[in-house]
Length: 287
Ligand SMILES: C[S@@+](CC[C@H](N)C(=O)[O-])C[C@H]1O[C@@H](n2cnc3c(N)ncnc32)[C@H](O)[C@@H]1O
Image 1 (tube, rainbow, N blue to C red):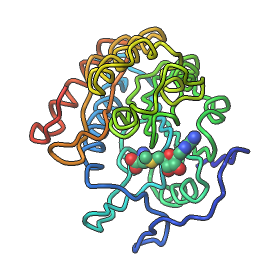
Image 2 (image 1 turned 45 degrees about the horizontal axis):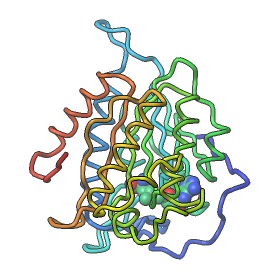
Image 3 (image 1 turned 30 degrees about the horizontal axis):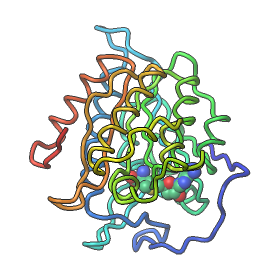
Image 4 (image 1 turned 180 degrees about the vertical axis):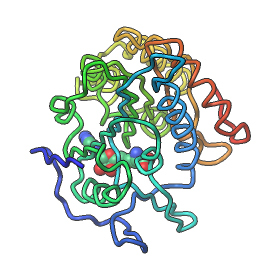
């Protein structure tokens, strides 16, 4: 395993929950985390296996899983007290040839390294402890690789569009991005004004100010239009297949965030459609 510490790493000591099993940091989460992981894992498995070369198809010899905002690897479900594997530990069994994880918090990145160190695939793992923007500039993805990138920030301001543009310049990739639309956009509508500066979360996430003329209607209408602008931005960097998303709900009535999928190839879209249909028809995933 390779572990890289970047100047932007945040060494602040951990104050969150720790595991009763291994004493290491846990990511505090709600029970909806299982919905997020179900769709992710179903797709990751299909991607890693489906893109593998075989006697019937050329496939991709290098299949990279890249996770920006990876967390410590185990979550604490606060409603039940259960400890459940985080996204890195859920994906690590699949047939990728390289796993790259990035997290700014040193206690989280170190815990993830310890948790993955004994895994059979540990020699395929690299962990970057630092800000995603800095890691993206430094990490090297083999040319000729096909990458599946999961972008899982805690708020839209943490995932500027520039990250996606740079990622696309670096590697051929499909993306799954968590868009925190409920807290990050709809509930904060009152904060977003036509004179907002370039540091405004909506501008950072979209990468420009084209959201300003669509301000005005209800939060729902605004967000639907904003999402359409975001899809157009994805298309402008070659990710033209992003027609559907999964909504992850806090409870039956309260949507929390979206998992938006984007690919440059219709086969990616086909895989995602199957992942959504197959991950669990009972969960209320909607488009
Ligand atoms: C939502 S959690 C990740 C959960 C994880 N993907 C899972 O499902 O198990 C977000 C993580 O992003 C990290 N983070 C926040 N800002 C960051 C940044 N600018 N660059 C890298 N990591 C960041 C936090 O330390 C936190 O561990």
